[in-house]
Length: 332
Image (cartoon, rainbow, N blue to C red; front, side, top):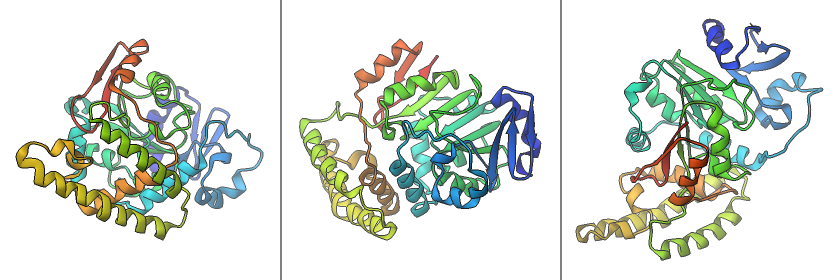
């Protein structure tokens, strides 16, 4: 059993001594959590994906039905996104360095680090040799892809669950990162950041920026893109979604990147939407972001000043000046 040598870690995370591991489940006190393909299922059965429902249908009866704050379409979209783009790409290494510019990665050597909203596990894959332990959490079927991508990493634990309702104790880990997740939740994303305060002393977050450091025409273009997104996000057919993602990359992203390259010698490329972040990306990587942007119904955006208001909850909030905007470190 995969978790046989991880019992002490599980006891520490849940904050209890009464834990029993079976081949198909983990019992914590009076609560029994199914285990499917080495993923511990923390989600309420009313939040199960179709895949999990089919696999565990004999075990889902008699549980409470509470869908408060749960967005099934968001869960579906991210599960489908990572099925379509399951691989870990070379540019993800560069992106990791960009996101973690506020953090000394050497400090993870003896740490338990949690990847909240892990998707296909790309960031954890790149950190697996730097951390003592990695906790991966996602509420979609992407968690099973993360398990496959980290099949050779024995220091990882995998959980399917809603980050708003995790049954772990306070400070169950040393460091949490949550990149590109909270702005898609059906609750104010900054309030979601505040709720994560209990998880660890330090928290690294990326939220979509409100284009507050860009010219006004960026925000005008965003309104047009938002209208298109609200239509496209209703598409459910997987092949049509991939076709739209490819078209968006070729018809929208690539041309703008080309304009940025032309203007770069004149130091004007930063005034071209999309250029700054995507000019070094492969077509495959751009497609994945098009999918992410245009098939997700909920998209919140925040300014640097709004992020600084988190100072009412954290002792220190450091916002990076670098792309991607905005990522920031909260210290309790």
